[in-house]
Length: 184
Figure 1 (tube, rainbow, N blue to C red):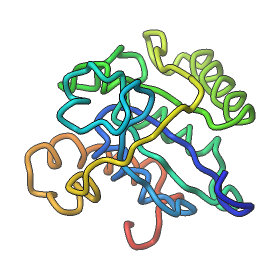
Figure 2: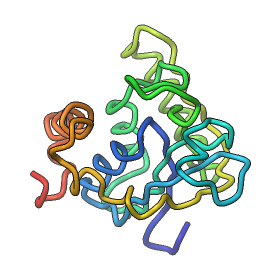
Figure 3: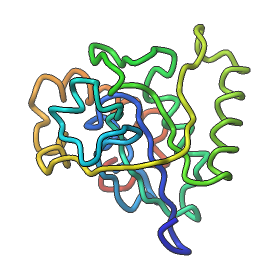
């Protein structure tokens, strides 16, 4: 928790360029920082994380106002904007650094995350089992500056067009009421 008005969550669901582009568009989200979470090496670099040896996942740390957007809503969007059934992989991004994870910051987040995962599995939304790890938050290291606002800076790049663009389109279709006006 940062103060009485905002909360922090740390999520991993593939490339952090995708996660940042999705969550920064949500009403009630104050900031989204791409970075590395869950590893054992202090102050890792992108090059080291890409090797898979640091144990970190490409992640985002999201500061949000729970009076505007609930943690439950954030998780709902998290579950539906990536494939939580593929172990250490999102599309062509392969390796432990692309795993699906919720790094909970307190017991309340843990309970909500576990409940939402169970409900999603019960609904049968995915034909395969959800492999998303729900684990205590240990560390977060902000990524290098060139990763910040990557989608906005490189919308014409093939990765942005073919991977991030469709995820944003899906967000606007399914969660348009939760998107900040400037992104609609």
